[in-house]
Image (tube, rainbow, N blue to C red):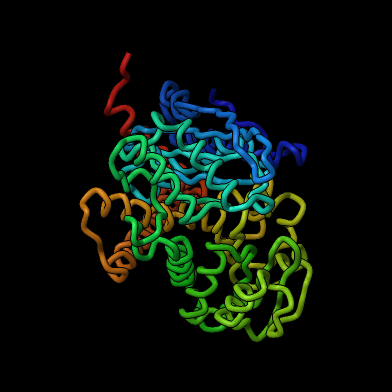
Length: 426
Ligand code: GLU
């Protein structure tokens, strides 16, 4: 139990998110000298549900999709975490994402456990009708598993406000009453929160500001490269540009854009909205995505998916700060190389916690039936993100560990304390 495995692994194992999570958990638990029993409790998810759901497709045929909902911990409150739709969703990935939610909610000290869901599907090839039927059937299969006091889903990769509206409606139909607090990330007119859509990007901007102050670096002239231009990447780019950062590169899976003078983010956003992609934008030169990640900049922000920074490219990075907008973008083997290069890492469970923090505000507002202004939401969000950044940095300093280990230690400590205080029901 006390043994911590070596990070030198074949690439396939290096990129298994559950292995990465387990390694980092073990490492932090060891440093905390965590009680053996609590170690065993917190290492595994508490509940895992797999469903195989039939969906009537537009061509009249029935297709069966496999979906998961995994609750890693409900010690500090209801499970909380998104649902993703992608062809490569796997149980191990959802497990890892569920446990990252536990640690993330504990880092920002909000009263939730951690959970995650996913369906193996190719949402880009499905119609709105097919997506709606799949979402509703998945919700129906999970009906006893989720709820405002049990487990509260939210959007993640390839799910959005509309997906949350369908889940809320399906759940409400079964309960025979409208239950807005069953999901967060809903449209604002049906119990969503002002500021939720931009919240992950806003949280990223806040921790970047704090890191710049901490490292005595000026925002003026600070060059930023983002990988991913979905909800998280595009909002982070916009908010960082508003704060005076220069966005010199944006990379998507099929190619990127570069401009030494800085990309005009609002114009790039409207180009993407108009054409469906960042390609063909006249304000930047087209570049290869992999190469763009290794160009010189002050801040690199992977904001799409897991395993973007691995042992294959970490040694080539030329950034001062790595700010993890995505969940699990960096492998354990890459961490070692980043440390050798002295790159200052803003770990995912801190850097992208703005989304779930605003989800917490949404859940609170739904249960009160009283809604805050966008300014109130943003102010509260900024305070939590700033305090959490400071908590992680002081933990790293006082325990002489890197930022990621500090964030894990802080989170595990909080969850272990609550678990112990509640005691074992047996
Ligand atoms: N999917 C987001 C995340 O990974 C948000 C989760 C939530 O708001 O519950 O943090």
